[in-house]
Amino acid sequence: MSLATDPLWYKNAIFYELHIRAFADSNGDGKGDLLGIIPKLDYLKELGVDCIWLLPMFPSPLKDDGYDIADYYNIHPDYGTVEDFKKLVDEAHARGLRVITDLVLNHTSDQHAWFIESRKSKDNPYRDYYVWSDTDQKYQETRIIFLDTEPSNWTYDETTGQYYWHRFYASQPDLNYDNPVVADTMIEVLKYWMDMGIDGFRADAVPYLFEREGTNCENLPETHAYLKRVRAVLDADYPGTILLGEANQWPWDLRPYFGGNPDDPEMPGDEFHMAFHFPVMPRIYKALKLGDASDIIQIMADTPAIPSNSQWCVFLRNHDELTLEMVTEEDRQLLWQLYAPDPRMRLNLGIRRRLAPLLDNNRAKIELANSILFTLPGAPIIYYGDEIGMGDNIWLFDRNGVRTPMQWTSEPGAGFSAAAPETFYAPLIDDETYGYQKINVAAQMADPASLFHTLKHMVAVRKANPVLGEGSYQFLRTGNKAILANLRQSDQAAILAIHNLSGQNQTAVLDLSDFAGRIPRDLLGRLATSLPEISTVPYSVSVKPLDYFWLKLK
Ligand code: NOJ
Image 1: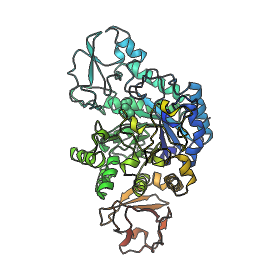
Image 2 (image 1 turned 45 degrees about the vertical axis):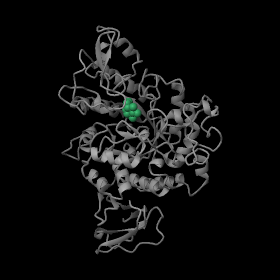
Image 3 (image 1 turned 180 degrees about the vertical axis):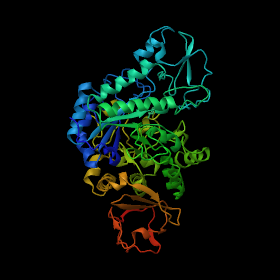
Image 4 (image 1 turned 135 degrees about the vertical axis):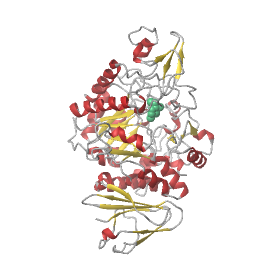
């Protein structure tokens, strides 16, 4: 079943990122699965989610939690079957929820049949599916991403005495996109899943598809050309579906992923419909800690305009470490000091913690961060569990500490699984502050004052005001660096979102003369008293510590 389509549905959608293993277990084996998600769809619907993004669900040795795929045409046995997957998609669609899945184009697992063949001999028919070299000195300008574990992007393979190329773990050999068979085959993979009626893909690690000597092997023209080809398939055969690109890059390097023509904003995008805005994310955390909005404003000023059929995807956290790749070395050190004082909290160039612990479990800060997210240009993504303020476990391996079982109830097993908790794929969070006994969906749904309800309200208000998804944005001068004031505008509507990033009372002095004669309406219902009419003289608003409000001006 497909959904009635507004082809631009994604522009004002709320996304929810969900790890199948972590969400809900239907068969009592201690691991989440596809059928487990179905009874939880109404919960997501209640939160106001429009589209679910499922992390990789394919057969995999799980050396990178499923981003190491051993078979593109199947479902990991822990998660269920292809039939289960179709059922989930149908059940989601029946509730008006869309589903996108991960599309991992760049690499496979070393356990994939193609690689098992490829490494057998230099003349194996699959040899050219991967990138082999006699030396490990090629592409020297390419950075290593998994810095904490990988000494090189090349790994020596004894059988044939050559090296193979990998941008992530050595167990994830990169596919060779210079081989047209690979390029074509991956389009077939895409069609296979699209034919099951999904609503698109979150495309993993897209900057790295091609390698060229003398470059850093990222964002190459060949890569963009291939991605445009992928988009053309979607446009031709699967209208209304989307590609959401994961390119952890600077804004000016992100812009080409939308396609179209950077010099002509009227020209529609013909590459990704959406791309994550990686650089703004760490700047939100910096702003919150320093009580200074400047870096958010600056990075958005450095962000080129995108075509009108495109949208940013904005997020506070996801299943990876909070990446600090898109900040200066100085800011990286600062953010590590501020947010990851314990070395165990650090991983590669990032921080492996969840939203609530990062913000000291401070409710006002968690709300404020979400309010910034929901009013920035782009469609927001909520990472599973962050809507109830789940904690993390920095003692678990790699990024597993932010992928622990979803906390549904206070019962033993947290309502996640009927299995004995000690057999779960990962331990439940059960400390005093974030334990499932205290932090769980049931408790928060029953409490109208909970974080869940506050976010649900924010989602509803955002969706009732499409200008927040589609309108232009402009950061107004406030005369006060602690205040972030973002004006979102369309022909029909104008909303001003005001955030006090500091722990002190602050005043913003705003030029709102364009709206003279209007009385701001408090959309979230947070102000104790109503605001005066706007005139042509500077408009002064006082904002309590860490407070935020959304004012409808038109
Ligand atoms: C990005 C994914 O988000 C991450 O989890 C994964 O390890 C790498 N890509 C490699 O696929």
